[in-house]
Image 1: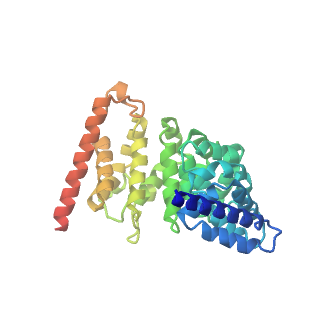
Image 2 (image 1 turned 90 degrees about the vertical axis):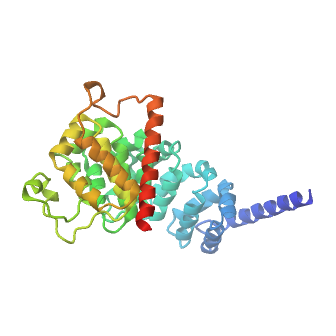
Image 3 (image 1 turned 120 degrees about the vertical axis):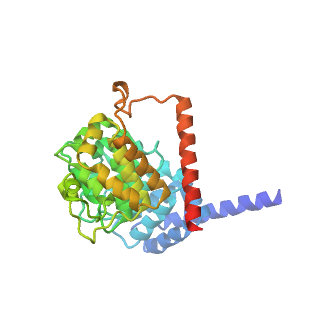
Length: 358
């Protein structure tokens, strides 16, 4: 009982101290920079983040300071990035989304807060609504010459919901072209991962496939290029590839991150879910790129994804009722068997990898 009373007393003292700190966070206060630094230090621990997330007044004060041009704005933003990772911070921070969005595209920290708030799929539509019609601030950040790295996670999060995909699929197509350009961004794996994740999520709706594969966007060469190596192919095979994939220079390198290579293969697998998509992948030499990748790849999960896509491209066409694989309902028993087969394949790859290492 005494220990519980002592804990309650400590909590009350911490809450009182946070209330005092909150009063100092006004942009007009000379003490604001120091108070913001104290809040940032507090947010560095799990207990501190939980304390901030449970104190709406402190979060509101940090948001007001972060949106100002005063000296404490940067540590205030950094404290919000940490605090926004707590689920309890969602409700208090949603009203501040428009003011934080005004800091885009220059502020990576503001992107980080929005990415944390939209991490839960149920919260993503609410963040999008708070961003305003068409998610304008998000698209402004996407159009920046050097988008902040934190934008990658935000793009991936919002594209998991239909409203987010609709914003990225705006009529002019420039947002999709920008995502495709970021697939080869040399400066940030986070941006590449986010762009590929957003494109993959857009491909879950098969009605988007035709547009992505159309001459207007011509996404296929841009998705294949990070999977292609500098290997020399016979001339008759080279001519089957899109021009952008022919005669790559010796210094060309595949995407270095296994997770991103896997996501690219998953995106191509989704595009191959329809008959028209499979036909285009076959006609434009995708198998040749995948064949060379298969010989080069050493990461088990990526290798497995590559093998599955190759099987789809070289296999027989499914019967008419199953040509759109995204609309096929798989019986539960078959789902179970497929999951078991995947697990067995993974176990076999793991054993082979251990034998090779030995």
